Amino acid sequence: MKNILKTLGLCIAGGFILQGCQQDEEADRISPEVIHQIEEMGFNPDGIVKIAEGYLIENDIIIRESDLGHDHVGIIANGKDTKKQYSTDFLVNAGSGRVITIYAPVEGSGGGGGGNGKGKKPGGGGGGDGYSPAMIAGLDEAIARYNAEGLSITFQRVTSSSGADIVMTRLNKRQERQGVLGSAGFPTASGDPYPEIKMSGVLESSYGLSTDGIATIIAHEMGHCIGFRHTDYFDRSISCGGATSNEGDGGVGANHIPGTPTGADLQGNGSWMLSCTDGSNRPFTNADKTALDYLY
Image (cartoon, rainbow, N blue to C red; front, top):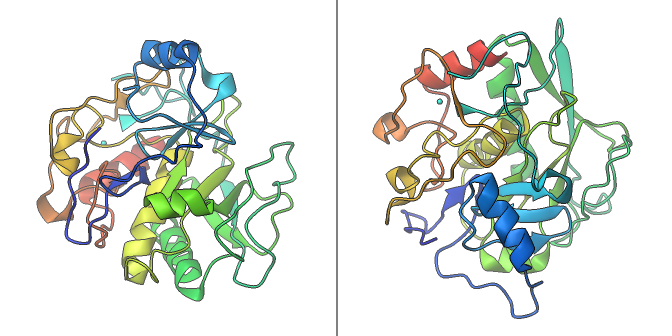
C-alpha cells in the first residue's frame, strides 16, 4: 500500500510508517496460508509484517495468530447492538464503570519489555530504555482526553507493568528505522482491552512532534485497544492519499456507530481515528465524542 507523505513526512495508519520504507531482508517470510487467511478475513494482504505478537496489518493493526480464521459475527457488547466513526464486534466490558490501567516505562527504568501480569506477554522493547518525558506527557494528555468525556471507562497511568491492563512498549530498532510510529490490536472476546500498545520512542527527537501530536497518536492506538476501527477504513485514501484502499471487515467487524457520519473527511483536522495524519494535533471532534459516548 502506498502512503502519501504529509507535512512532516509521517503516515499514521493506526500503527504508522513512513513512505518508501522497505522491510529488512531478514524479515520473516509470510506463508501463503497466512496470506490467504488474512485475505479471507477481509484485510488487504499487501505489506504484512511478521512480529512477535502475530502480524502487523495496514501498518498499525496487530492481528494475533489466534485471530486468524475467526469470524466475529453478531456480537453485542455492553448491551448495545453496534451492527448498524466504526467499531469492532468485541468491545471492552465496562460494567457499571471500569478503570483501564496503562503502564509505560520511563527513561532509565529498564526498558519497555515485560508482561502485564495477566497471562499475556507483550513483545519486549528494543528501541531504548523507556520513554522520554515528552512521550510520557503525551500519554498523560491522551488519557486526559478520554477521561474528560465522562465515559463508563476511564484510563489511569500506573508505575508498574504488573497487573496493568495495557502495557506500552518500545518498538524494536528495525521498526523505528523503518518509520513505524505505533501499533495496537482490538478488544478480546472476553471484553478486555487489547493488552499492548507498541510505540516509537522517537516521535519528538526524530520527528519534532509536540505533546499534542504525540497524544493524538497514542490516543489513536488506545482507540484501537477499546474497539475503534479507522474512521476511513472503507477508503484509506481519504486521509492517506493515493489509490482507494478498503481495509475490509477484517473478521473483527466494522460497525457504523449510530449518530456519526458514514463518510469521512479532513475538515477541522478530522477524526482522531483517521488512518493517516501529518502528526498534528487532532482532539476529539463532535462526531468522535458521539461515538465514544455511544459505545461507552
